Length: 287
View (cartoon, rainbow, N blue to C red):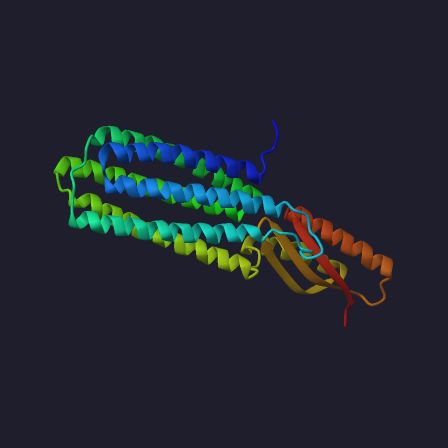
């Protein structure tokens, strides 16, 4: 079975967005519910975000060049930020529409069929979100992780809308539909802020996570028994790529060959401990 790359999962997200747009728009057209309309609008945001994520992922596959010697891995952070801005725009549109409906409530038509189509769309989003989340962790892709988080937000939003529309049909309180839509808008605003924060954090060269740094330190500390020390350890992540720089200190009477062989050994161990890690070492004598 061929191994799936990040862009394959981005195409899966696009296909899911197209399917859910169709189902949720059908649900809204049947019922006239502003809550279901807000849910359908967010699916358009999902489509735009997935398309942009695919574009950025394809850019990251370009090899390093003269202007970008460290590659194009940071392009994925633009995807996360773009999706955050899209979610904010959808939230404003949802809250605005819901505010108008709050002042002028309208009855919901055929809630049963509308809820059935919306539930089908929600099931699709849930499955795809889980797949993207696992792929994002395995492939170190912030674009896939952001898409997964966005889809899971859509899932919880949809469940809230479905419950709200059902309550409106049961209680007859029409303004509840608009109030739920406003709550949906506020909820996805919070998700947008989180995605924007993560995007900025990545563009500012955040270090590797604590577990990865601990593994690096464990590898380097093991060489102390051989009289080797280190300093100036620095790590950073750029999309799916990870980078490490460290100064290795060896006894001053070592030959150049001994030092070179040691650095090769250390780099191989570090790259084995963290797959995909790009290691840069510098050799100096102990004081």
